[in-house]
Each structure stands twice: as structure tokens, then as C-alpha cells.
Image 1 (cartoon, rainbow, N blue to C red):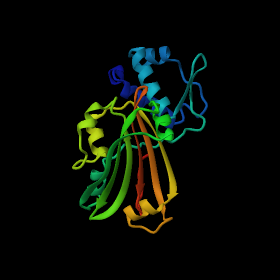
Image 2: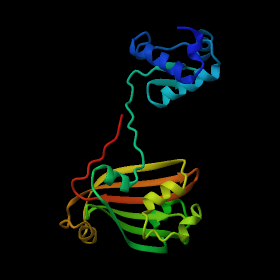
Image 3: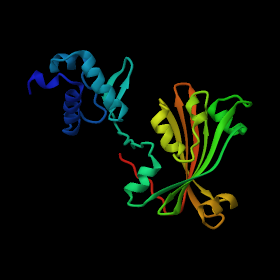
Length: 233
């Protein structure tokens, strides 16, 4: 393989992957340092660094300062989870999408919400509750808080025609987030909204997104029975 192949970090990554999969570098092995690999591949050291960093982020390499880079002894498969537009999710499943805004208000958030979002206890947040429907049947109940100091445009949006889920993905950039999945029992109000018996088991998704150190939105989605979450590894 000539050095022309290794002008991009992606080509270096492919060759490193080939060596790992071919067991030229076995799990636990210390691989050559960046300078040696750059000399071998005929590329810049920064190109090698970018390739190795990507593989470390995917769990295939273990990089430690002053200790070098090793092939991970027990690679961790990482799932890729994108924040879905619920409307797209429903339509891609072959159903027609419906949306109903239940409540929109500016209120001081409960302590557990303001604490998680790191907003002041007296700061008012935009609170939205809405129902997403598939072919007219309840699909997901959305209970959301939006920090309008970070997303000021949300203060003038009615959210009666477009969901906050879809609007925020178009208008509010975020840098990272926290997500948790759980099973909860439907209380009387949520059971009535979703049209299920009280204490039915529901799939819950709690997500908090950030723009660097500032919280953007905190949402709990409760899905009607039968919902399936799909992702990739």
C-alpha cells in the first residue's frame, strides 16, 4: 500500500482497524507511537492522532498519557442514539402523525427540575405538556421544561402547531446531553392522557440537553405500551 493512501485520517483509521481485526495487533498489545506510525504511513502526526482518537472514542483503543496506546483488551460496544423527531418516527412507521398541546406556561420549576438544569429556584421556565399521536391513538406524552434564557426564541413560539421536540432540534443547538431510560407506572392523569389503565407499565425516557455549561431543555417522554426503542452498535 503506497503512502498516497494515508493522506486522510480515515485511511489511517482503516489500516489500524485492519491490523486489529487481522490480529496483527492483538487485544492488550501496545501499538507503535504516533511519530513512528506517521513515519510509516507517510503522513502528518496530527493525521495519526485524529485516527487513533476516533478509535479510542469508539472503545477499540485504550490511550493513556505517558503509557502509550494499546488495543483494548475488552472492547466496549457503544450504542449510537440520535434524538429523534417523533413526527418522523411515527411517519416512518407508516402511521399518520398527530399532535395536541395540553399546557403551555411560564412557571418556577420544581426543585428537582431547577436543580438538574442548574437554574435559579426563582427563575421561570417554559413548561410544556403535549401528546403525540399515531393514527389518532396516543403514542407519547411529553412533559418538557425549556430554559428561555438560553433559547429566547422559544418564549414567543406557541407550540400549538409544532412540537417542542421538533422545534428545538431545528432552532436550539446543543453540545451534549444526559439520558436515562426506565419503566414507570402510569398515574391516573397520565393513564387518562394515554388511554391506558392506571398503573400500566410505561417506557420512560428522561433527557437533559446542554449548550456547554447552560441547560437547554429537560424532557420526560412517556410512551404508550408497545413502544420499541431501536439503536445501533
